Image 1: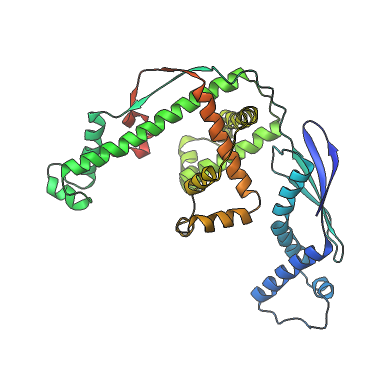
Image 2: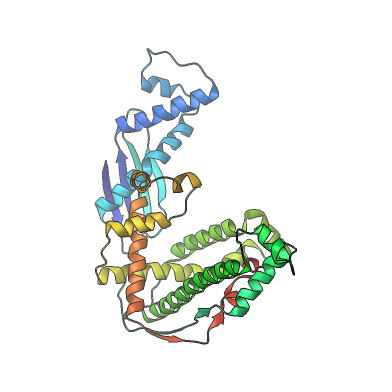
Length: 352
């Protein structure tokens, strides 16, 4: 593979990726055989060359695009490492030449990460809200469980529906679960409070293209969380348009981009190191299908290594986590009035 930088400014870079003719032909033939098998067509004459077979195939452009989709991720990741650039946006891909028997040449344009000058990242001062568990929280949760199972005054009936032998065991489980939730939310509140101060102390200018891309990422996240149908119903009932929702998520999108840039700069500054144990822990935390979660670590690790950019992304997330921990360890934190864990939950998570 070869990558050639053809234009670069402080804001963007354009480069060429060249895939040799043999590799591209092999990928094309794989897609050709898949397509013809799916279409139920008979195998073409064995006396024809690959180039001749492909030249007579009516959907050559379609399978060429599929071949590129499979080849490009690995070539793209190698190219940006070779060229030493840090893209800030998804690549804008423009095939230049994909003629049979010739190298495939693709032009790619990306926006680049801005240069970050850290003004302050140690000794940041912030107020955060602790989240606590009260007896009232536990009682309300159990009352909600009683209503769900029509066992308002019948302990035996309630326990029949749940994997506990006594009400005391149920109370202990609810307490442990809510305590863990409260601790997680307290930690998150600390992080958010400090990140806001980090952004205030270190202003960052973002290109509109970068913001718009992150808005799309946020919109996809909202759609996945709510479900497409539920989101559409919500928009109709609230009178909101897609543009209205994009305006609503814009502040969060900007903050997330700035957060990533600044934490990356902090990680570089304090020379964050990543161990194999860090990687193992992060992989175990990654969401996945049931089948993936059932695999042993070595198998999951191998699959990640075989996916272009996946291991680099995991290492990046670890660096951000460690940078956040470092900033918090050096921060001056003030506790505000604590709130109950029940009050910190969104409505759909509360047991009615």
